[in-house]
Image (tube, rainbow, N blue to C red):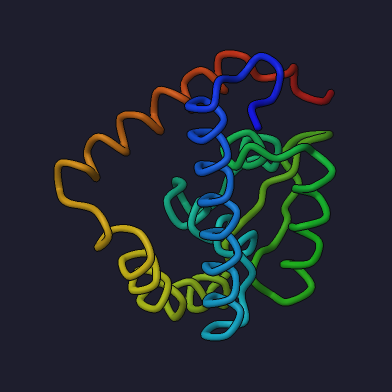
Length: 155
């Protein structure tokens, strides 16, 4: 049954998209945990830091790029620092750098092949090249709107 304000077609598109994202997230998380002991959040932080100059990034910038609130990033970095995957270094009087450690880089390199294989199996190989391009364009359009209407960052 359509919800007020959404047609049956709109509701189908929304519910299908939502279910797909949630199930993909769950399956990717399961694969990462089983093969590397990393969570999807761990993998996200490691991947972003691996691409940053000098494998370091201000914690607040890392949170912005990941789309996470300040407290979520703080707790994630604390868990990862305890495991030796990242280090935190002071930057000025109030800033903190998140830094990828050698152990974190090794964990990421270990996780990448299995993660890529699972992404390919569950997502990439299900679409034709044209569908993949269309999907990327559609997702980018939705993401652009989300970024444009992002709530103000925590201070």
